[in-house]
View (tube, one colour):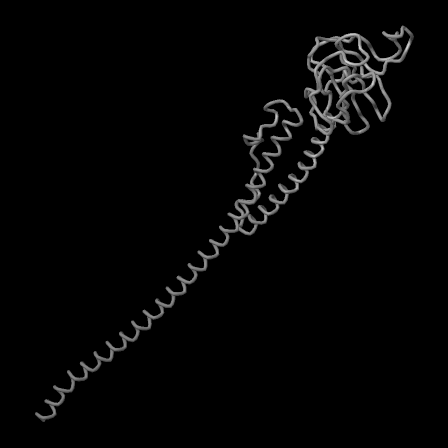
Length: 285
């Protein structure tokens, strides 16, 4: 009896200890499993964050690239707009490309609160295409204005002298040498000997030297069938083949050739035939 009691006394604590050990071991296993699950979830979250960061960086790179393209287009359009404003002779300040355009209007209901990144990139692509199209259109307009300005440069207009007066008009007159009626193919501008003789339009010099009746003559071909002649010069400042600009000095006024005094005999030829220079002298371009 005493032996049984002693065994029970010893067995009960042993069972308690074993039960505690098993419970502790089970809790440890549970903790390991929980910790492993949390670690896996953290790994998944890290991967998701990294993927989100990568996607965001790709989107930002795409936006930066589109923005750079658009900035280049805008700078090109601004520069072209400023050139066209000057070429067209528009009033200062009418088109100022250095400041944003004036916008306004009453507040309206917002249709969409925000744009998704793909939608925003598509919007930028569309705007970039519109800018490119506008640039192409402005290039065509610039070409047209350049052609218009070039045409204005090569069409005769203005006086062949900076100072002086008309001493003989175009048409029938009494010849100063023969006294008989004769046709005068140009207009004479009298002035001071040595005064400047200037080109009334841009062109290429096709004659530079003495010519019967004209004395020292300068002839310029302006294209489009136009030729101008400047006769009786004292000295010539250009040579054959020179390209001259409108208003450029060609010679100095003199009285060489068939002349009674210092003047410039000015002729305008259209398709090989002399025409009245008066309409070109009076033209303003």
